[in-house]
Length: 199
Image (cartoon, rainbow, N blue to C red; front, side, top):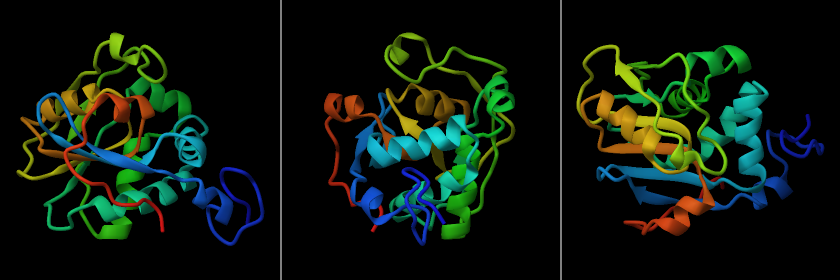
């Protein structure tokens, strides 16, 4: 078996060196006051894992990311709701990162997954520099959801995507993401201490 991020021989998804290079994320607040727990900083091996999942369709990359997210989950919540990818990008890349992460988290935590959000067909790409100037994606709710669900997404950059998803569901108090952009950590004051990512 080879490490997903550096291709070195290893007995698991990530080699010892790549695991040691993972950096803990942060706990942040969106503009609407939702708490977002981000497992890892979007740098090094964590960034490569997200890119493998998001742009190369490597579904196995969801597992180590979900392993980092799982300790941040409250297993008493009624369900987790993945933030879906725009349909055009899902067709192009053959994968929906939020759905894959939610499925991996469900297998680790036993929490049910509710695919309660529908994404628009297409929206301008938000990843990379200038994402905050491109507007937020739009979502619609498929059905009413119970209170206390947690949104699941791959990367926290500005919080606009999570805010739009939460608003479509009538307000969501919490979210967990795999990674957080370093610029987001520098721009926000974390409301609480953060726990380490992968062991």
